[in-house]
Amino acid sequence: MTESMIALLSFVLTLMVFSYLLGDLPLIGNLYRLAVYIFIGMSAAFTLIVGTESVILPYMQDVLDPETTWTSLGSRADTYIFLAALLVALLLLLKPVRSLTWLTNSVFAVVIVVSASVAVVGALTGTLFPLLHSTAALPDDILTDFDAMVDTLLIFLGTMTALYYFHYQTRLDSEGAPAQSRMGSGLRHVGKVFLVIALGAIYASTILSSLTILTERISFLFQFGA
Image 1 (tube, rainbow, N blue to C red):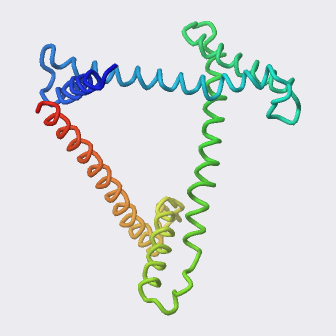
Image 2: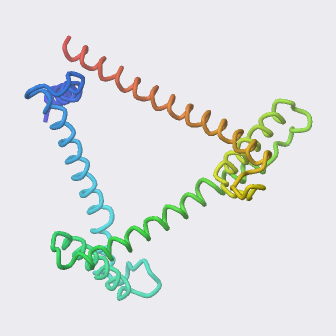
């Protein structure tokens, strides 16, 4: 496919996405949906191709070649792992069969639990622990540099109060109703302020990124039309 054909296809798809601004009009209202369907289909196909070439085919080579095993148990362990993964995949494909719903739901439960465990471990080791380490680490010039001292105190205060915002432990007051102490309530309000500032900054960054992409697409349309 030549560059002119790619440019023409990009131009048509861009107009199809922008047709969303015209509302749900006859024929035109379906152009945006068609563009979304194309995007989802291309993404699914790309994921399938990458997964096949990067995971399945290399793993099959390891299974068939005993000298390239990636486990300490030998090629037999690779074969067992492959058969177990194949069995799980086949069970997931049986989801439309109503009589086997309990079995496929069990497989889904295992997949979700494993995925959640991997996500939790990744969040702890990749986000929370480095954040705690960065928060606890003091700059070398904190005693002589006032700006470094203020930044360190703000980071520590923001981190601790933002974490404390999700602390819901209460005590019973004199009337038997649950209530928080004044200090706890104050810390939660401070944490809420830091959370709102952080979410606002993330939202503003997302808007700026979207405007940058929109500007680039509009510039592309004008250049292509010229």
